[in-house]
Length: 391
Image (tube, rainbow, N blue to C red):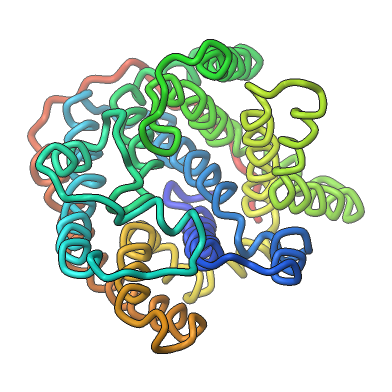
């Protein structure tokens, strides 16, 4: 039987976090043509597929958050919210305090010759307003200023506020109706580009943008709801068909950016990025299908090294840019950038291990302790989880 805690999902999150780190390493410099050819348009593109990896985060969040509701676990909205707020905010606040400190200490130094993306961050004065906006996390603000990776956490937090309602929709409605709702939310989200309202002050930080990313949570919830059927379907498929699924997962996830180009060619300028996100979501969904349905893949993803990066993935995501910017400001022009990347990765892993052990785990325990005496309340009487085929 598939466990409530699924190791493969944690490992996939860890691999996605590493891809985000590599993507940001790649983005620091003005890359020459050969470098772009090697990493941006080759089979190695998945190594720097940062945006696709964030789409995977959203999908996995929908999947994992859905499991307790499917299991029939009784909980209050307050209990869910307290645990979720503590889980996201406390590690985040500590990381951001580190970001404010390093920004204040190092950003005055002039660093030249790097990419436009690099100069989008650490490029202004620290103000009380910007600190408060960043620490609250749910507003529409300049999320690039201190740690531009946090844009996805803005949506994670907003969607967490309404996730029990999302779970209700997934449980009560058919998959066709849920997908229709998801597509409708994305269509509504795209109107912000058509009519130029709710303009984002950071990277996709508009409130209407959250409608679109909520659709990916809905799809993740559907995958969790039907995971038993998915496993059975994949396990009963022929070997040839399984390889077709694996290839489709790789192509859709790795080259989702081409869907944006197709959308632009068709004149769908306001929806081309949404089209690319849905392509990445399709690929990410198939990756989850393979991870759940293949005993061999599940065994590989359950290896200690993958579980290790899965455990520290949140802290890895929080700290890597802070460490990267710190070392670029300290060492750029003194040592090669390749050395800076190696030092950044190793130190980020170390910090992430410490953060996971001394901040994340105690925070999770605190959330459980604070909600232990809450009276249960549920919107359903029995679990809907389907029987799952043994792998």
